[in-house]
Image (cartoon, rainbow, N blue to C red; front, side):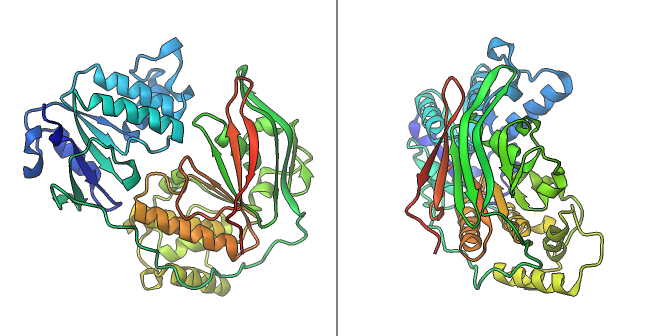
Amino acid sequence: MQKTVHTAIYTDNRSKKKQFANQLLKGNPPEELQFLKGLKGVLFSNTRIAELLEEEALHERSGLQLPGQRKLASFSSGERKKALLKHILAADPDYLLLDNPFDNLDKDFREVLKKDLLALSDKKILIQFISRAADTLSCMKQSCFLDNGLLVGFPDYRPAKTAASALSGTIPPPLQPLENLPEILVSFKDVNLSYHGRPILKEINWKIRQGEFWELRGANGSGKTSLITMITGENPKAYGQQIDLFGRPKGSGESIWEIKEKIGYFTPAVTDRFRGNHSLENMLISGFMDSIGLYIKPSDLQLQLAAKWLKLLGWYPRRHESFRSLSEGEKRLLLCARAMVKHPPLLILDEPTAGLDDTAAAWVTDLVNKMAVQSKSAIVFVSHRIEPGLSGQYIFELIPSPEGSLGRQIRSNKLKS
């Protein structure tokens, strides 16, 4: 088999990748990839893992042969990808369609998977969909860009340097800033966490003060999500621990809604919750109410602030367009702005750039940097990937150990100005 058939297909959030992948796997490759005609391909993707997780939730089995009778849901992102790769190779395919294989993986597991895939390149054809140019496998010998379902630039396309975002001006002021907040918004003291006897976190000590900009890092399965849910009030294991939230000990009578009103929160999964035909303007305004859509008449001041946010993003002329018409990158940008619209004391952004192309990720990073510098909100940015250009002041890193992940604080040289 000639190694030159390994092909990199660069994509953005408007590439129509899903339809193109289905076309390939059904045996209908375009002219540029006719060498795949008559060959059997399999898909390696986060979407496939999500389907297996849903199957497991519905029928108590995923269809994968997993070690130790563990459920796929109990695996880390890296372990899931390893199990899926073993499963699809058992079918002895001629080629693997790799859909952003390194998404949601920490640095160490990315290197492990990269080594495995490069070893496979001597035996199987690899077709790699790529959103982030840095993820390109070194075995790729021909390349192209998927433009609205069509391949362009074949066979030697080279991705352009990421352009700066079009954000201009400053972020709008708060509608009604919360007052009388303590200097320390969140305090963890010797916090431990375990599930079913398995230690997750060990003696975590962490303080988040007003206006600080933190990056939360850690390997897959190190406990980042567990740590975040102990702040947002969604993890009952926070009770009985030495955790103070906004000046009150956890479990001292505060309601989950009292906590949530002081927190802006974004995770990519929230995108799927907005299924109605909401306009961009209404989506932003709904951030004032923390509602899934807007169902009451907004005030004049809310409309004015929404207009300022849309002008910052460069979308004011599109304010009446449907949220569903946006690309994935544009949706993320709008939802990050929505999480910030009320200037919460604490803004948590959980993997806001996961699955985005380089350009869209740069837009989100630029907006987050603006929000950090131009507001009094403390920001926690959670990511498996070190984003170029992100200007966090501090890093809180979870370091796995047999007794649970330990916390390490690092002061960055990229300080808020």
